[in-house]
Amino acid sequence: MRKFLRYMLVAVLVLAMLVGAAGCSGSKSSGGNTSSGEKKPTIVVGSKTFTEALLLGTMTYQYLRALGYPVENKVGLGELAVIRPALESGQVGAYWEYTGTVLINVMKHAPSFDEKESYNLVKEWDAKNNIIWLDYAPLNDTYGIMVRKDIADKYNLKTTSDLINQIKKGEKIRFVSTQEYNERPDGLSHFEEVYGFKYPRNLVINAALNVGYEALKTGQAEAGLAFTTDARVKAYGLVMLEDDKKCFPVYNAAPLFRKEILDAYPKIPEQMKKLSSLLDNETIMELNKQVDVDKKSVDEVAKEFLKKNGLIK
Image 1 (cartoon, helix red, strand yellow):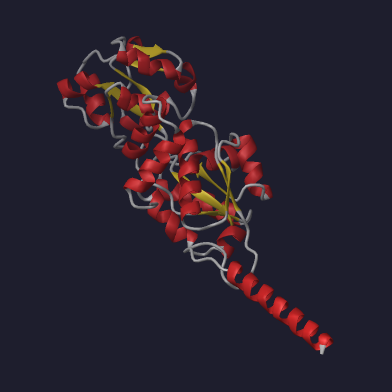
Image 2 (cartoon, helix red, strand yellow):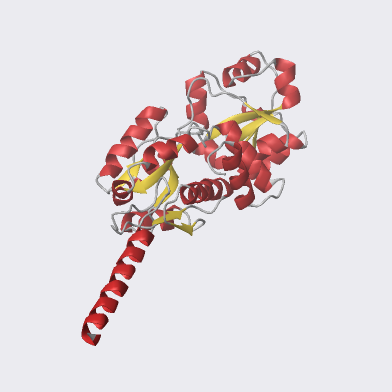
C-alpha cells in the first residue's frame, strides 16, 4: 500500500511538472515563440554609431520587443567594417543599411542614381549571403543642395534646377563645397553635366563638409553641399532643394535580416514595413534634430515616435 501511494505521489508530481512546463512554453504575443515548445532564435539588433543609425536600430529593437520577439540590444556596435561582418557571421541578426553603401563599398559597383535599381542590385547580391533586404524606407541619406531660406524666398527656389537657372542668369550665389567632392568623378563635374551648366569657380568655396552648414548660417555663402537628412538643415532654418534630375547617388535605408531570423519569424517583413514606410527625409531629419540639437536621448526619441505612430503602447 505504501509503495502504491509512493507511485501515485510521484505520478501526480510528474503530471504537475508537465502541466506547468506546458503552460510556460507558449507566448501570447504576435511575434514571439509559439506554444509548440520549439526553440527560436534571439534577434540581435545592431546598428552603426551615428545618430540616424542609432535611431533606426533603437526603434527596431523597441518595436520588435513590443511585438513579443526575443531580442538583444547591440545598437551602436560599429561602422561598416564592424557591423557588416557581424551580420554575415550571424553575430548580429538585423540592422539598417543604406543601398548605396553596400552597392559601392561592399559590391564595388558603380553608383546608382535610381532607387529601385540600387535596391534590386543589393537585394539580389545579398541573397547568396543569407541576408534579406526588407522594403526600403523613403528616406534617402545622400548629398543634396541646401540654400539659405532668405535666398530660397528671394528666388522662389524649390528644386536644384531653379537654383541653376538663377546662376545661369548671372546671379552671384556663392556655393560652399569640399575639395574632395569637387575632384570626384561623381562629384561637381557630374553635377554640372547632369544639370547642364558650369558653376563659376570664383563663386565656389572649398571647406570641410561640416563647415558648410556654418558658412550658410553665418552668411558666408548662399548655397552649399549637404547631407539630405542632416539635422542642421532644419536646426539652422535652411532649405533642402529637390534633386529634380536625380544627380546624386541613392542611399535609401532598409532593414537587413539574416534569413534564418525571417524563416523563424515570417511576420517580420510586414511588421517592419509599417515602420519603414513612415521614415522619409523630413521625418528622420526631425528625429535627428531632437537628438543632436534638442539633446534628447535616442531611447526617448525612438519611443516617442513609435508611440505617436501607434507601433507600441
